[in-house]
Amino acid sequence: VVLPPRRFHAEPVMEKAQAAGVAMFAMYPKRQNHHIAAWANSELYLAMEEARLPLALEIGQVNYGEVYDLARAHPRMPIVLWNIGYTDERLLIPILDLCPNVHAGLATRFIPTDGIEQFTKRYGPGRLIFGRGWPAQSPGPLLTYVTYADVPDDAKAAILAGNIRALLAGVRWKVQGL
View (cartoon, one colour):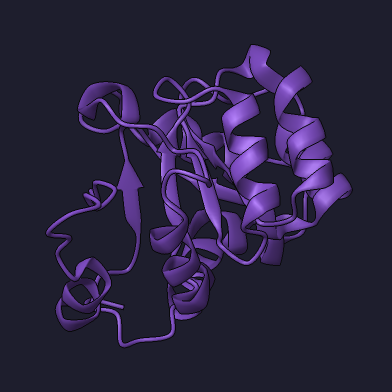
């Protein structure tokens, strides 16, 4: 979890992240009382974009307008949206159409009917990332959903592990545990 640096006495966040082999940052702006706006955190986002360090955002912590603005302002920074609701497709699809750096996290709240097939057909298998909501939810139903989807086996492998590995392998420093 990263907090936007303070304007005075800012700590070297990116240097510490690189030294620790951090693979991804997450932000919780509502819980931690800050904003994700590009204008408010430009130095951090520019550094993340340069490092190709992904940013995980929980949709309950941000709104789709904020995600869109951030993704358009920093198109080389991968963004992974988590806890998307299946009813959010009307907002998610336009963002995915317009922002190729945004990825959708599959989880128990986002299992749309024929969703694996439709998303894979529209975007290829590279934009869906397997999640599970553990320990509150068993990974079994979501795993079954992906396993039995009517998509090629390489698409299933990408969704279940390959996509997140590719994002983390794209980070421009050595990532711990990869």
